[in-house]
Image (tube, rainbow, N blue to C red):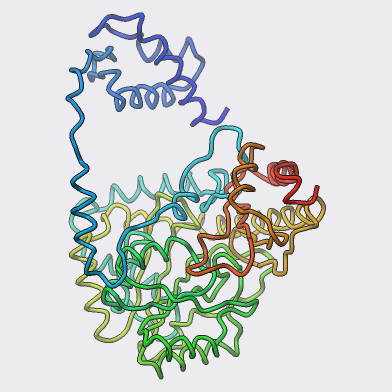
Length: 479
């Protein structure tokens, strides 16, 4: 049984048995619990920590665990209705409402119920994460001299140099800031580049988390359509002229959700169009390290071909490691770098030094290239398994593009499909899927799904998930 499910099972049993003990009464020792339930000491420790976090148990070093005394009766609920007026009045003068809909982000962060196939996940399954290598890196990092001191505000020089080499071109370590994950880096970039109330150009469809960032900052996302070769330059130029926008956010490599790669002939054109508009291009290079085994050589980041400081580059280690390994980079040239640095310092001070040291240990270890090769092969196998299963069991859906990188597919659904109803029916059938609507900042041209193959246990679970999806909504799927 997986460690996390063992912890949950033990917590459930101990929670039911707490009534056997009077308040302040001592629970069995950890050794007794290990022997009785035949679990590891780590499982017992985590279960007791969970109960302590719930306020049900009190642990005392050297003495053991005790049933917590009853909490005092809850105070009467207050009246927070005044906040509706305060929050609405605060936004009355805003050109763009700053209320935030996080549903498109939460769908890829929330864990589905037990037994549900997770086609909506946004991170690698634990079996694909380099858990041993990360643990070893963190242990070594904690012993480095000065590891628990304050790091340079911009990040450790060695880590900035590593990110700069990965970006390539003439980017130097001095032009890199270490940030706490890609979402944080994108937030900093948009705050630095676009004042509230202004438009920001986005790919259509695009990552819902980026749309949420823009709207939370009071920006107005304006869609620019993407095809199989990435963003369409002519429409990008039209959008700049029509809106006066000064920022375009894009994912040139394995775009989320379409998987498109910006065609070679469009790369220079996108930079030229932005430069002519006096605008920045925010390049979200989020998934370069999740390339598939059969991809061939990858194009360099746009930032590597940009001598004029048009591109603000974002890249991260998180997707290739773990959702909790939140180390990323912002790279930029010219005066904008100081503005990015100032906003980051005000918002977060710096990325914790032990995590930066652990990142250096990880990417410098022999385990790192081995991990990337293993993930590359596994993602290709999973992509092929999901593609084959969809074509076999769901021939009604259209799959015009099968990417050679990333962790998901973007099938187009039959005309008239109700995404919301299908998503609910799929969950009842035991498979969690992501509807396409949140990926569009305006009206979508058709119904879509984003199906992740990275968050499941393996190819067998992919086949089972697609079979469940087949039965989820017979009318919608023509079954």
